Image 1 (cartoon, rainbow, N blue to C red):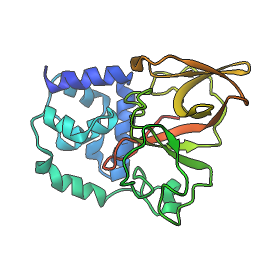
Image 2: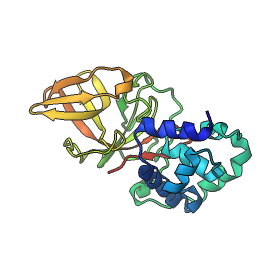
Image 3: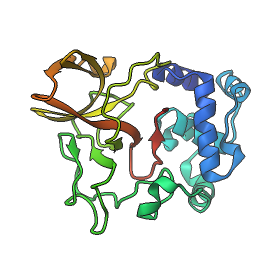
Image 4: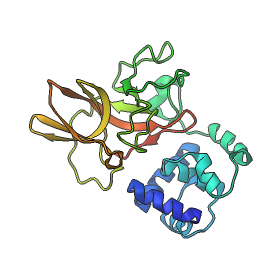
Length: 249
């Protein structure tokens, strides 16, 4: 199987349209102030038909398709050590982001010190014990770490990753979402702990829906008594060395 076919299969598995890949890659190009990261519809079609993309577009594909950069580079027979200059330059050309201004960070980078402690098995909401002193976790946006054994949302929100939560978006949104990628994911507290799920509210009951590939069952809780929505997940950091994957509005 040639790399382009792998790209296509991965894109389809995520439910991403070419226009969505173009949008995601454009956001990455803006973030790094480098148009070489952009993957227009026509370019993606060529890549999937076995044309060879540039290094920048390979890195952009990894971001868009939620893959490790080394994995995509390996598809094309390239060792990440050979492109280390590009990776280093990238960290020096990130466009500022007002959302993380309070933390002095750049858009897409994890705003706190990545913890050295092993990831807990269960998903948990971060508090002051998890971050360096001086960082506030009391505002609109909260952060959580997905448990090492929590594979309920599969590669959309991977086990061990960190997520950013908007606590002002606590009402389940109802609209014609284009793909699983577009369906809002919520961070939930229930009587057994925390989790990330797609949600459907039926009267006073909240249905929590895991990723279908996880083979975990959906669960139903009564609102207020047994479950509450902490907020909507805006972005996810799969690992320390990766930028945030930002979900569509």
